[in-house]
Image (cartoon, rainbow, N blue to C red):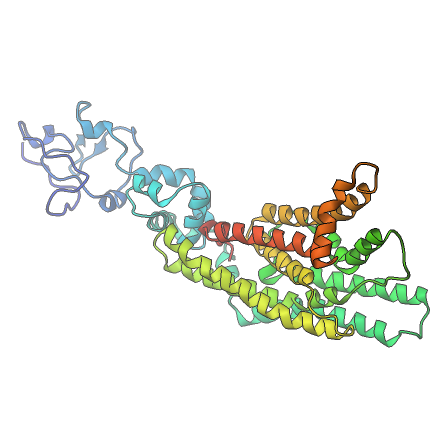
Length: 431
């Protein structure tokens, strides 16, 4: 009986993964699958029917069934197509993906690194994701509207829409401040309090609208930060006066608070959104041009630091303008640190990392709440040591040193975490 025709086109020379050819002692139909000819490469095996491992013998080109003997070491090794099992395990991810980059991000989120990709005969996660994406039929690659949603982020009309939304908080706060300044000395205390409450509600609604769209939009079900945000904003207005009252031993007249930080932070929502957009767009480009996870991480960290620097550069003049509106208020370090903390917390939340943001905000609130509590506790007999740290801090930097330390320390810790967490591909598959 003659030799059966080859079912696959086999390249010249042995495959690197193939066993040395065994000497042919019988006919062609009696030869083992790994003997006589070089083993087909992975790309050739992928193009065939790809039977499951252990599914039984595979029909040859002439209809005969050629099965490898049980004694052949190659037959007892891993299946010829290890990517097939990975595809079955992550089929839902591959079907929903808009492009291979989203699959690479999902694989990394499941713990598959470049080193692990070598087990699937790929040099990195990106090439493995490209093969997984190619194996899924195009009609099954995600919902029909997914590509349109991906393009919407780069559409000029879409950018104009969310730009308008992020300008609303600053405009609402300016309007509220303008009305209060215009009615000063005209309306009574009750009417002014009502106007203040109405202005605060207007700013809150505008801020909620700004955070519901654009680059600052967080995924559904993200961390609950509203309580911590309200505490930090309230402390920015009344906290230093409260601390001064506790240090002085009682009230020493009417203290209206310092609303300038609220105006500066409201105006900073727009540059925060654009800096977040800058980071998301450039990180996505780095993701598309990288061929290894380490390469992407090394390229995206400078982009993150650039985005943070741009935001700080925009926050400085806004705080100066807000201070000028309240009689030369200046730029308190505490309000500057609070703005950086809010920006980093929202940036991580928008990229699907709400837990670190909540932790940082809660830690800042805890430090600010602990300061007056320690001062009051230090007045008890024998517990004067409790107030010593706060006394030293206030003596060195004034009452503003407490929120500056609380917000600045939390912001630096969050920046260090973001440099690691946001340099992973899994943090960018939504953008």
